[in-house]
Length: 530
Image 1 (tube, helix red, strand yellow):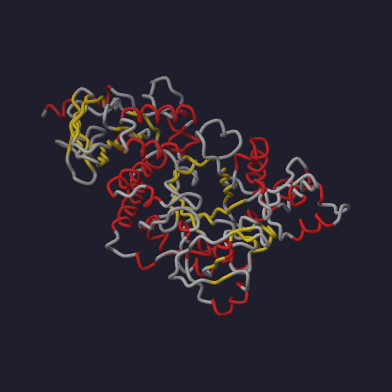
Image 2 (cartoon, helix red, strand yellow; image 1 turned 45 degrees about the vertical axis):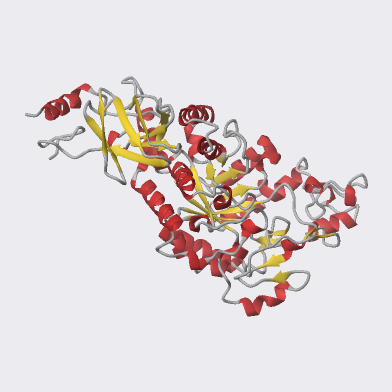
Protein backbone atom coordinates (compact mmCIF):
# COMPACT_ATOMS: atom_id res chain seq x y z
CA UNK A 1 0.00 0.00 0.00
CA UNK A 2 1.41 3.41 -0.99
CA UNK A 3 2.00 6.27 1.42
CA UNK A 4 -0.70 8.28 -0.39
CA UNK A 5 -3.25 5.48 0.04
CA UNK A 6 -2.39 5.00 3.72
CA UNK A 7 -2.83 8.69 4.41
CA UNK A 8 -6.05 8.74 2.41
CA UNK A 9 -7.57 5.90 4.45
CA UNK A 10 -6.58 7.58 7.72
CA UNK A 11 -8.05 10.84 6.55
CA UNK A 12 -11.49 9.30 6.22
CA UNK A 13 -11.58 8.80 9.98
CA UNK A 14 -9.39 11.65 11.19
CA UNK A 15 -11.01 14.71 9.58
CA UNK A 16 -14.44 16.33 9.87
CA UNK A 17 -17.01 15.30 7.29
CA UNK A 18 -17.39 18.86 6.08
CA UNK A 19 -15.07 21.76 5.37
CA UNK A 20 -15.96 25.42 5.11
CA UNK A 21 -18.57 27.40 7.02
CA UNK A 22 -20.93 30.29 6.33
CA UNK A 23 -18.35 32.66 7.81
CA UNK A 24 -15.57 31.34 5.59
CA UNK A 25 -13.75 29.91 8.62
CA UNK A 26 -12.84 26.24 9.22
CA UNK A 27 -15.68 24.03 10.47
CA UNK A 28 -15.91 23.18 14.12
CA UNK A 29 -16.99 19.60 15.00
CA UNK A 30 -19.63 21.19 17.25
CA UNK A 31 -21.34 23.15 14.47
CA UNK A 32 -25.06 22.56 14.09
CA UNK A 33 -26.53 20.64 11.19
CA UNK A 34 -28.18 23.85 10.03
CA UNK A 35 -24.82 25.61 9.82
CA UNK A 36 -23.21 22.69 8.02
CA UNK A 37 -25.86 22.54 5.32
CA UNK A 38 -26.39 26.28 4.81
CA UNK A 39 -24.05 26.48 1.80
CA UNK A 40 -25.97 23.76 -0.03
CA UNK A 41 -29.24 25.53 0.72
CA UNK A 42 -27.99 28.66 -1.03
CA UNK A 43 -27.90 26.87 -4.37
CA UNK A 44 -31.70 26.50 -4.22
CA UNK A 45 -32.15 30.29 -4.26
CA UNK A 46 -31.98 31.52 -7.87
CA UNK A 47 -30.81 34.97 -6.75
CA UNK A 48 -27.53 33.77 -5.25
CA UNK A 49 -24.64 34.23 -7.62
CA UNK A 50 -26.86 34.59 -10.71
CA UNK A 51 -25.35 35.97 -13.92
CA UNK A 52 -27.30 39.11 -14.88
CA UNK A 53 -27.46 40.64 -18.37
CA UNK A 54 -28.45 44.32 -18.61
CA UNK A 55 -30.32 45.61 -21.67
CA UNK A 56 -31.42 49.03 -22.90
CA UNK A 57 -34.31 47.92 -25.11
CA UNK A 58 -34.02 50.75 -27.67
CA UNK A 59 -30.38 49.85 -28.35
CA UNK A 60 -30.28 46.05 -28.13
CA UNK A 61 -31.75 44.70 -31.36
CA UNK A 62 -33.18 46.44 -34.46
CA UNK A 63 -36.94 46.14 -34.85
CA UNK A 64 -38.40 44.11 -37.67
CA UNK A 65 -41.42 46.40 -37.58
CA UNK A 66 -39.63 49.74 -37.88
CA UNK A 67 -41.61 51.11 -40.85
CA UNK A 68 -44.88 50.77 -38.95
CA UNK A 69 -43.38 52.53 -35.93
CA UNK A 70 -41.78 55.55 -37.58
CA UNK A 71 -44.64 57.83 -36.54
CA UNK A 72 -43.65 57.27 -32.89
CA UNK A 73 -40.38 59.12 -33.44
CA UNK A 74 -41.78 62.42 -34.74
CA UNK A 75 -39.88 65.64 -33.96
CA UNK A 76 -38.35 66.59 -31.64
CA UNK A 77 -37.50 62.88 -31.48
CA UNK A 78 -35.15 61.48 -34.11
CA UNK A 79 -34.81 57.94 -35.42
CA UNK A 80 -31.21 56.96 -36.15
CA UNK A 81 -29.73 54.19 -38.30
CA UNK A 82 -28.49 51.15 -36.40
CA UNK A 83 -24.99 51.70 -37.78
CA UNK A 84 -24.76 55.18 -36.23
CA UNK A 85 -23.14 55.77 -32.85
CA UNK A 86 -24.66 58.24 -30.36
CA UNK A 87 -23.12 61.69 -30.12
CA UNK A 88 -23.64 64.37 -27.49
CA UNK A 89 -26.25 66.97 -28.37
CA UNK A 90 -27.17 70.36 -26.97
CA UNK A 91 -29.42 71.33 -24.11
CA UNK A 92 -32.95 72.25 -25.20
CA UNK A 93 -34.51 74.88 -22.95
CA UNK A 94 -37.91 74.14 -24.50
CA UNK A 95 -37.81 70.43 -23.70
CA UNK A 96 -35.74 70.77 -20.54
CA UNK A 97 -33.35 68.03 -21.65
CA UNK A 98 -30.44 67.24 -23.92
CA UNK A 99 -31.23 66.63 -27.56
CA UNK A 100 -29.39 63.28 -27.52
CA UNK A 101 -31.98 62.05 -25.00
CA UNK A 102 -34.44 62.15 -27.91
CA UNK A 103 -32.34 60.06 -30.33
CA UNK A 104 -33.80 56.60 -30.88
CA UNK A 105 -32.55 53.46 -32.62
CA UNK A 106 -35.88 51.63 -32.68
CA UNK A 107 -35.34 48.49 -30.62
CA UNK A 108 -38.39 46.93 -28.97
CA UNK A 109 -39.49 43.98 -26.84
CA UNK A 110 -40.12 41.75 -29.85
CA UNK A 111 -36.68 42.38 -31.32
CA UNK A 112 -35.17 41.72 -27.88
CA UNK A 113 -37.05 38.44 -27.69
CA UNK A 114 -35.68 37.46 -31.09
CA UNK A 115 -32.15 37.68 -29.65
CA UNK A 116 -32.67 35.70 -26.42
CA UNK A 117 -30.61 32.88 -27.93
CA UNK A 118 -27.55 35.08 -27.45
CA UNK A 119 -28.24 35.18 -23.71
CA UNK A 120 -28.79 31.44 -23.44
CA UNK A 121 -25.61 30.85 -25.44
CA UNK A 122 -23.70 33.01 -22.95
CA UNK A 123 -25.23 31.17 -20.00
CA UNK A 124 -27.14 34.13 -18.55
CA UNK A 125 -29.49 33.52 -15.61
CA UNK A 126 -31.31 36.85 -15.35
CA UNK A 127 -32.38 39.47 -17.90
CA UNK A 128 -32.49 42.98 -16.42
CA UNK A 129 -34.32 45.60 -18.48
CA UNK A 130 -33.77 49.31 -18.07
CA UNK A 131 -37.11 51.22 -17.87
CA UNK A 132 -39.75 50.06 -20.34
CA UNK A 133 -42.72 52.17 -19.26
CA UNK A 134 -44.29 55.06 -21.19
CA UNK A 135 -41.87 57.99 -21.25
CA UNK A 136 -40.72 60.76 -23.56
CA UNK A 137 -36.94 60.12 -23.69
CA UNK A 138 -34.95 57.20 -25.04
CA UNK A 139 -33.66 56.19 -21.58
CA UNK A 140 -37.19 56.27 -20.10
CA UNK A 141 -36.19 57.28 -16.60
CA UNK A 142 -38.82 60.03 -16.99
CA UNK A 143 -41.90 57.84 -16.57
CA UNK A 144 -45.20 59.17 -17.87
CA UNK A 145 -47.33 56.12 -17.00
CA UNK A 146 -45.96 53.22 -14.96
CA UNK A 147 -48.68 50.81 -16.02
CA UNK A 148 -48.24 51.29 -19.77
CA UNK A 149 -45.45 49.83 -21.86
CA UNK A 150 -43.86 52.60 -23.92
CA UNK A 151 -45.35 52.43 -27.42
CA UNK A 152 -41.91 52.34 -29.09
CA UNK A 153 -41.22 49.13 -27.14
CA UNK A 154 -44.54 47.39 -27.72
CA UNK A 155 -47.47 46.34 -25.57
CA UNK A 156 -48.49 44.38 -22.50
CA UNK A 157 -48.86 41.37 -24.79
CA UNK A 158 -45.25 41.79 -25.94
CA UNK A 159 -44.03 41.91 -22.34
CA UNK A 160 -46.10 38.83 -21.53
CA UNK A 161 -44.57 36.96 -24.48
CA UNK A 162 -41.06 38.03 -23.48
CA UNK A 163 -41.55 36.94 -19.86
CA UNK A 164 -42.89 33.56 -21.01
CA UNK A 165 -39.94 33.03 -23.36
CA UNK A 166 -37.42 34.06 -20.70
CA UNK A 167 -38.95 31.59 -18.23
CA UNK A 168 -39.08 28.86 -20.86
CA UNK A 169 -35.31 29.28 -21.22
CA UNK A 170 -34.91 28.81 -17.43
CA UNK A 171 -34.02 32.45 -16.93
CA UNK A 172 -35.61 35.20 -14.82
CA UNK A 173 -36.50 38.80 -15.60
CA UNK A 174 -36.01 41.94 -13.50
CA UNK A 175 -37.45 45.38 -14.27
CA UNK A 176 -36.15 48.87 -13.46
CA UNK A 177 -38.17 50.73 -10.82
CA UNK A 178 -37.79 54.51 -10.90
CA UNK A 179 -39.56 55.66 -7.74
CA UNK A 180 -37.80 58.83 -6.64
CA UNK A 181 -39.02 60.83 -9.64
CA UNK A 182 -41.20 60.54 -12.74
CA UNK A 183 -41.45 62.58 -15.97
CA UNK A 184 -43.01 65.99 -16.53
CA UNK A 185 -45.12 64.50 -19.38
CA UNK A 186 -47.02 62.36 -16.85
CA UNK A 187 -50.77 63.16 -17.10
CA UNK A 188 -51.04 62.66 -13.35
CA UNK A 189 -48.32 65.21 -12.66
CA UNK A 190 -49.58 67.73 -15.20
CA UNK A 191 -53.07 67.63 -13.68
CA UNK A 192 -51.66 68.07 -10.18
CA UNK A 193 -49.50 70.99 -11.30
CA UNK A 194 -52.42 72.76 -12.97
CA UNK A 195 -55.12 72.22 -10.34
CA UNK A 196 -54.47 73.13 -6.66
CA UNK A 197 -57.39 70.89 -5.67
CA UNK A 198 -56.19 67.84 -7.59
CA UNK A 199 -56.20 64.74 -5.33
CA UNK A 200 -52.65 63.85 -6.38
CA UNK A 201 -51.14 67.28 -5.76
CA UNK A 202 -49.71 66.23 -2.37
CA UNK A 203 -47.89 63.37 -4.09
CA UNK A 204 -45.43 65.98 -5.38
CA UNK A 205 -43.67 69.05 -4.01
CA UNK A 206 -45.44 71.84 -5.86
CA UNK A 207 -44.60 75.31 -4.62
CA UNK A 208 -43.56 78.64 -6.19
CA UNK A 209 -40.37 78.56 -4.12
CA UNK A 210 -39.04 75.83 -6.39
CA UNK A 211 -37.59 76.50 -9.82
CA UNK A 212 -40.30 75.75 -12.41
CA UNK A 213 -42.86 75.74 -9.58
CA UNK A 214 -42.10 72.22 -8.40
CA UNK A 215 -39.24 70.23 -6.94
CA UNK A 216 -37.29 68.38 -9.63
CA UNK A 217 -34.86 65.56 -9.02
CA UNK A 218 -31.46 67.31 -8.69
CA UNK A 219 -33.29 70.35 -10.10
CA UNK A 220 -33.96 68.72 -13.49
CA UNK A 221 -37.20 70.15 -14.88
CA UNK A 222 -38.00 66.96 -16.80
CA UNK A 223 -37.90 64.86 -13.61
CA UNK A 224 -40.44 65.98 -10.99
CA UNK A 225 -39.67 64.41 -7.62
CA UNK A 226 -42.18 62.20 -5.82
CA UNK A 227 -43.14 63.29 -2.31
CA UNK A 228 -42.55 59.90 -0.75
CA UNK A 229 -43.44 61.17 2.72
CA UNK A 230 -47.01 60.96 1.45
CA UNK A 231 -48.31 57.48 2.24
CA UNK A 232 -50.79 57.54 -0.65
CA UNK A 233 -47.96 58.09 -3.12
CA UNK A 234 -46.10 55.13 -1.64
CA UNK A 235 -49.28 53.10 -1.81
CA UNK A 236 -49.59 53.83 -5.53
CA UNK A 237 -45.97 52.94 -6.19
CA UNK A 238 -45.50 49.84 -4.03
CA UNK A 239 -47.74 49.26 -0.99
CA UNK A 240 -51.23 48.86 -2.45
CA UNK A 241 -52.35 45.53 -3.89
CA UNK A 242 -52.66 47.19 -7.32
CA UNK A 243 -49.42 49.18 -6.94
CA UNK A 244 -46.79 49.41 -9.66
CA UNK A 245 -44.44 46.98 -7.91
CA UNK A 246 -47.12 44.36 -7.27
CA UNK A 247 -48.77 44.81 -10.70
CA UNK A 248 -45.75 43.58 -12.64
CA UNK A 249 -44.82 40.86 -10.18
CA UNK A 250 -48.36 39.53 -10.63
CA UNK A 251 -47.64 39.49 -14.38
CA UNK A 252 -44.73 37.10 -13.86
CA UNK A 253 -41.80 39.50 -13.48
CA UNK A 254 -39.27 38.15 -10.97
CA UNK A 255 -37.85 41.26 -9.36
CA UNK A 256 -36.98 44.94 -9.32
CA UNK A 257 -33.83 47.01 -9.62
CA UNK A 258 -34.47 50.26 -7.75
CA UNK A 259 -33.07 53.36 -9.40
CA UNK A 260 -31.01 55.65 -7.12
CA UNK A 261 -31.94 53.34 -4.26
CA UNK A 262 -29.83 55.12 -1.66
CA UNK A 263 -32.04 58.22 -1.99
CA UNK A 264 -35.14 56.24 -1.11
CA UNK A 265 -33.68 55.44 2.30
CA UNK A 266 -33.72 52.23 4.28
CA UNK A 267 -37.27 52.56 5.63
CA UNK A 268 -38.91 52.97 2.22
CA UNK A 269 -36.65 50.38 0.62
CA UNK A 270 -37.71 47.88 3.27
CA UNK A 271 -41.35 48.67 2.45
CA UNK A 272 -40.71 47.94 -1.23
CA UNK A 273 -38.97 44.66 -0.46
CA UNK A 274 -41.78 43.60 1.88
CA UNK A 275 -44.40 44.36 -0.76
CA UNK A 276 -42.43 42.51 -3.43
CA UNK A 277 -41.86 39.42 -1.29
CA UNK A 278 -45.49 39.31 -0.20
CA UNK A 279 -46.60 39.39 -3.82
CA UNK A 280 -43.97 37.06 -5.26
CA UNK A 281 -42.09 34.99 -2.72
CA UNK A 282 -38.37 34.89 -3.47
CA UNK A 283 -38.47 37.89 -5.79
CA UNK A 284 -35.27 39.93 -6.08
CA UNK A 285 -35.08 43.56 -4.93
CA UNK A 286 -31.71 45.18 -5.67
CA UNK A 287 -30.97 48.81 -4.87
CA UNK A 288 -28.74 51.10 -6.90
CA UNK A 289 -26.56 51.70 -3.85
CA UNK A 290 -22.95 51.81 -4.95
CA UNK A 291 -21.06 52.73 -1.80
CA UNK A 292 -19.46 50.23 0.56
CA UNK A 293 -21.61 47.06 0.37
CA UNK A 294 -22.60 46.81 4.03
CA UNK A 295 -25.41 47.91 6.36
CA UNK A 296 -28.20 47.65 3.77
CA UNK A 297 -29.24 44.02 4.25
CA UNK A 298 -32.25 45.05 6.33
CA UNK A 299 -33.62 47.09 3.45
CA UNK A 300 -32.91 45.28 0.16
CA UNK A 301 -31.85 41.84 -1.03
CA UNK A 302 -28.68 43.22 -2.60
CA UNK A 303 -26.85 46.38 -3.68
CA UNK A 304 -24.53 47.49 -6.45
CA UNK A 305 -21.07 46.25 -5.51
CA UNK A 306 -18.46 48.23 -7.42
CA UNK A 307 -16.08 48.02 -4.45
CA UNK A 308 -14.06 44.84 -5.18
CA UNK A 309 -13.53 45.47 -8.88
CA UNK A 310 -12.47 49.06 -8.27
CA UNK A 311 -9.99 47.67 -5.75
CA UNK A 312 -8.83 45.29 -8.46
CA UNK A 313 -8.26 48.20 -10.83
CA UNK A 314 -6.18 50.01 -8.21
CA UNK A 315 -4.21 46.80 -7.76
CA UNK A 316 -3.48 46.64 -11.48
CA UNK A 317 -2.32 50.26 -11.41
CA UNK A 318 0.14 49.40 -8.63
CA UNK A 319 -1.43 51.57 -5.91
CA UNK A 320 -2.45 48.48 -3.92
CA UNK A 321 -0.74 45.12 -3.56
CA UNK A 322 -2.56 41.84 -4.02
CA UNK A 323 -2.21 41.13 -0.32
CA UNK A 324 -3.75 44.49 0.60
CA UNK A 325 -6.71 43.87 -1.69
CA UNK A 326 -7.15 40.43 -0.13
CA UNK A 327 -7.41 41.94 3.36
CA UNK A 328 -9.93 44.53 2.14
CA UNK A 329 -12.04 41.83 0.49
CA UNK A 330 -12.02 39.81 3.71
CA UNK A 331 -13.25 42.92 5.54
CA UNK A 332 -15.97 43.38 2.92
CA UNK A 333 -17.31 39.86 3.42
CA UNK A 334 -17.14 40.18 7.18
CA UNK A 335 -18.89 43.57 7.15
CA UNK A 336 -21.49 42.86 4.47
CA UNK A 337 -22.17 39.18 5.19
CA UNK A 338 -21.83 36.44 2.60
CA UNK A 339 -25.59 35.88 2.22
CA UNK A 340 -26.17 39.54 1.33
CA UNK A 341 -23.16 39.79 -0.98
CA UNK A 342 -24.23 36.72 -2.98
CA UNK A 343 -27.38 38.64 -3.98
CA UNK A 344 -25.53 41.89 -4.71
CA UNK A 345 -24.55 42.87 -8.25
CA UNK A 346 -20.90 42.95 -9.32
CA UNK A 347 -20.39 45.60 -12.00
CA UNK A 348 -17.55 46.41 -14.36
CA UNK A 349 -19.67 49.05 -16.11
CA UNK A 350 -23.26 50.04 -16.86
CA UNK A 351 -25.29 52.75 -18.60
CA UNK A 352 -24.09 55.42 -16.14
CA UNK A 353 -20.36 54.73 -16.50
CA UNK A 354 -17.87 54.69 -19.36
CA UNK A 355 -17.58 51.30 -21.03
CA UNK A 356 -15.21 48.82 -19.39
CA UNK A 357 -13.02 48.58 -22.52
CA UNK A 358 -12.60 52.36 -22.44
CA UNK A 359 -11.69 52.68 -18.77
CA UNK A 360 -9.40 49.62 -18.84
CA UNK A 361 -7.70 49.74 -22.26
CA UNK A 362 -5.28 46.81 -21.77
CA UNK A 363 -6.77 43.42 -22.63
CA UNK A 364 -4.63 41.61 -20.02
CA UNK A 365 -5.98 43.91 -17.30
CA UNK A 366 -9.56 43.40 -18.46
CA UNK A 367 -9.07 39.65 -18.34
CA UNK A 368 -7.95 39.84 -14.71
CA UNK A 369 -10.89 42.03 -13.68
CA UNK A 370 -13.32 39.79 -15.52
CA UNK A 371 -11.90 36.78 -13.69
CA UNK A 372 -12.45 38.60 -10.39
CA UNK A 373 -16.01 39.52 -11.38
CA UNK A 374 -16.89 35.88 -12.02
CA UNK A 375 -15.08 34.32 -9.04
CA UNK A 376 -15.86 36.74 -6.18
CA UNK A 377 -19.06 36.41 -4.12
CA UNK A 378 -21.97 38.09 -5.86
CA UNK A 379 -23.95 38.26 -9.08
CA UNK A 380 -21.87 39.45 -12.05
CA UNK A 381 -23.68 41.89 -14.33
CA UNK A 382 -22.87 41.99 -18.04
CA UNK A 383 -23.89 45.30 -19.63
CA UNK A 384 -25.02 44.56 -23.18
CA UNK A 385 -22.06 44.71 -25.55
CA UNK A 386 -19.42 44.56 -22.83
CA UNK A 387 -19.04 40.86 -23.58
CA UNK A 388 -17.96 41.95 -27.08
CA UNK A 389 -15.39 44.53 -25.99
CA UNK A 390 -17.55 47.52 -26.98
CA UNK A 391 -16.05 50.93 -26.14
CA UNK A 392 -17.70 54.20 -25.18
CA UNK A 393 -16.59 57.09 -22.98
CA UNK A 394 -19.65 58.15 -21.03
CA UNK A 395 -23.20 59.09 -21.95
CA UNK A 396 -24.30 58.90 -24.74
CA UNK A 397 -21.38 56.95 -26.26
CA UNK A 398 -21.74 54.19 -23.65
CA UNK A 399 -25.30 53.55 -24.87
CA UNK A 400 -24.50 52.70 -28.48
CA UNK A 401 -26.60 50.12 -30.37
CA UNK A 402 -25.52 46.52 -29.97
CA UNK A 403 -22.95 45.64 -32.70
CA UNK A 404 -24.19 42.20 -33.67
CA UNK A 405 -21.43 41.87 -36.27
CA UNK A 406 -18.99 41.45 -33.38
CA UNK A 407 -20.69 38.26 -32.21
CA UNK A 408 -18.16 35.90 -33.76
CA UNK A 409 -16.15 32.86 -32.71
CA UNK A 410 -12.99 34.95 -33.04
CA UNK A 411 -14.06 37.61 -30.53
CA UNK A 412 -11.59 37.19 -27.66
CA UNK A 413 -13.75 39.05 -25.14
CA UNK A 414 -16.85 37.03 -26.00
CA UNK A 415 -14.91 33.79 -25.73
CA UNK A 416 -13.58 34.76 -22.29
CA UNK A 417 -17.06 35.73 -21.06
CA UNK A 418 -18.44 32.36 -22.13
CA UNK A 419 -15.56 30.51 -20.49
CA UNK A 420 -15.99 32.33 -17.19
CA UNK A 421 -19.76 31.80 -17.11
CA UNK A 422 -19.27 28.12 -17.93
CA UNK A 423 -16.73 27.89 -15.12
CA UNK A 424 -19.29 29.30 -12.66
CA UNK A 425 -21.89 26.81 -13.78
CA UNK A 426 -19.46 23.93 -13.40
CA UNK A 427 -18.23 24.91 -9.93
CA UNK A 428 -20.97 25.48 -7.38
CA UNK A 429 -18.53 27.19 -5.01
CA UNK A 430 -18.12 30.09 -7.45
CA UNK A 431 -21.86 30.68 -7.41
CA UNK A 432 -22.77 30.19 -3.77
CA UNK A 433 -19.65 29.23 -1.85
CA UNK A 434 -18.07 30.83 1.19
CA UNK A 435 -15.16 33.19 0.75
CA UNK A 436 -11.82 33.41 2.56
CA UNK A 437 -8.55 35.05 1.65
CA UNK A 438 -5.08 33.53 1.78
CA UNK A 439 -2.11 35.34 3.29
CA UNK A 440 -0.17 36.20 0.20
CA UNK A 441 1.87 39.35 -0.44
CA UNK A 442 2.15 40.56 -4.03
CA UNK A 443 -0.44 38.06 -5.23
CA UNK A 444 -4.17 38.26 -4.56
CA UNK A 445 -5.33 34.82 -3.49
CA UNK A 446 -8.64 33.59 -2.13
CA UNK A 447 -10.82 30.50 -1.74
CA UNK A 448 -14.43 29.74 -2.60
CA UNK A 449 -15.64 26.73 -0.61
CA UNK A 450 -18.70 24.62 0.12
CA UNK A 451 -19.19 21.81 2.63
CA UNK A 452 -17.49 19.47 0.12
CA UNK A 453 -13.74 19.77 -0.36
CA UNK A 454 -13.93 18.68 -3.99
CA UNK A 455 -16.00 21.84 -4.75
CA UNK A 456 -13.15 24.11 -3.62
CA UNK A 457 -11.85 26.74 -6.03
CA UNK A 458 -8.62 28.62 -5.32
CA UNK A 459 -8.01 31.86 -7.23
CA UNK A 460 -4.50 33.32 -7.41
CA UNK A 461 -3.94 36.58 -9.30
CA UNK A 462 -0.65 38.21 -10.24
CA UNK A 463 -1.33 41.91 -10.97
CA UNK A 464 2.33 42.76 -11.57
CA UNK A 465 4.42 42.92 -14.73
CA UNK A 466 6.76 40.14 -13.53
CA UNK A 467 6.26 36.46 -12.79
CA UNK A 468 5.75 35.93 -9.05
CA UNK A 469 6.28 32.87 -6.85
CA UNK A 470 4.92 32.91 -3.32
CA UNK A 471 4.39 30.62 -0.36
CA UNK A 472 1.20 30.80 1.67
CA UNK A 473 -1.11 28.50 3.69
CA UNK A 474 -3.87 26.67 1.85
CA UNK A 475 -6.31 26.97 4.79
CA UNK A 476 -7.82 23.68 3.58
CA UNK A 477 -7.77 21.23 6.46
CA UNK A 478 -8.95 18.29 4.38
CA UNK A 479 -6.50 18.85 1.55
CA UNK A 480 -4.02 16.21 2.61
CA UNK A 481 -0.30 16.70 2.86
CA UNK A 482 1.00 16.12 -0.68
CA UNK A 483 -2.48 16.88 -1.98
CA UNK A 484 -2.53 18.83 -5.24
CA UNK A 485 -4.39 21.75 -6.76
CA UNK A 486 -4.69 21.86 -10.55
CA UNK A 487 -4.94 24.93 -12.79
CA UNK A 488 -8.24 24.45 -14.67
CA UNK A 489 -6.80 25.93 -17.86
CA UNK A 490 -3.12 24.96 -18.05
CA UNK A 491 -3.51 21.71 -16.04
CA UNK A 492 -0.35 22.59 -14.07
CA UNK A 493 -0.36 21.15 -10.56
CA UNK A 494 0.80 22.64 -7.28
CA UNK A 495 1.26 20.56 -4.14
CA UNK A 496 0.19 21.43 -0.62
CA UNK A 497 2.73 20.04 1.83
CA UNK A 498 1.52 20.22 5.43
CA UNK A 499 -0.91 22.91 4.29
CA UNK A 500 1.73 25.11 2.66
CA UNK A 501 1.22 26.08 -0.98
CA UNK A 502 4.09 27.09 -3.27
CA UNK A 503 2.65 28.70 -6.39
CA UNK A 504 4.17 30.54 -9.34
CA UNK A 505 2.01 32.84 -11.47
CA UNK A 506 3.08 34.46 -14.75
CA UNK A 507 2.94 38.25 -15.09
CA UNK A 508 -0.53 39.80 -15.34
CA UNK A 509 -2.39 36.51 -15.17
CA UNK A 510 -4.82 34.43 -13.12
CA UNK A 511 -4.66 30.87 -11.90
CA UNK A 512 -7.96 29.20 -11.04
CA UNK A 513 -7.26 25.92 -9.27
CA UNK A 514 -9.31 22.98 -8.02
CA UNK A 515 -8.34 19.92 -5.91
CA UNK A 516 -7.06 16.87 -7.76
CA UNK A 517 -9.55 14.11 -7.02
CA UNK A 518 -8.23 11.30 -9.23
CA UNK A 519 -8.18 8.06 -7.20
CA UNK A 520 -4.93 6.33 -6.25
CA UNK A 521 -4.90 2.55 -5.68
CA UNK A 522 -8.70 2.48 -5.50
CA UNK A 523 -9.00 5.39 -3.12
CA UNK A 524 -9.39 9.12 -3.46
CA UNK A 525 -8.53 11.54 -0.70
CA UNK A 526 -12.24 11.84 0.03
CA UNK A 527 -13.93 8.46 -0.23
CA UNK A 528 -13.37 4.88 -1.33
CA UNK A 529 -14.02 4.38 -5.03
CA UNK A 530 -16.69 1.72 -5.47
